[in-house]
Amino acid sequence: MSMWMTPIDVATFVTQLVAHVASRLRIPDFELKSAAELMEEVREKDVAVSEALLEFVLAYEEWYAVHELIERAGRSESRLQLLVDRVLARDAKREALKSALTKYP
Image 1 (cartoon, helix red, strand yellow):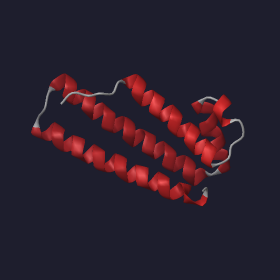
Image 2 (cartoon, one colour):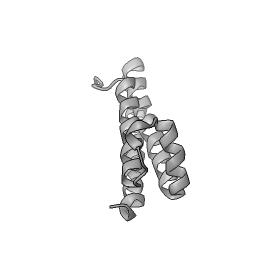
Image 3 (tube, one colour):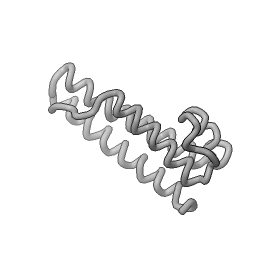
């Protein structure tokens, strides 16, 4: 199972995600700020969205880490089950973030 993503792709995705959420919350000048700055502003504007965003980012990074583990150590039944678990967790956190953002069309 070869990964088509790199750690840089993951970091880019997270940065774009944070900017997208900031945009949805109508944070001014979001495109001129770092992800760290935007995370603070998202938290100030809506704690629930901020928590959902952070949980999704963590779940996404955990999912990617399992892929890296499989790349390094090889496939096994337990690693593949861990991957399935991480996919389900990642997808659930994504849905929770989408739900938290519904009040910001």
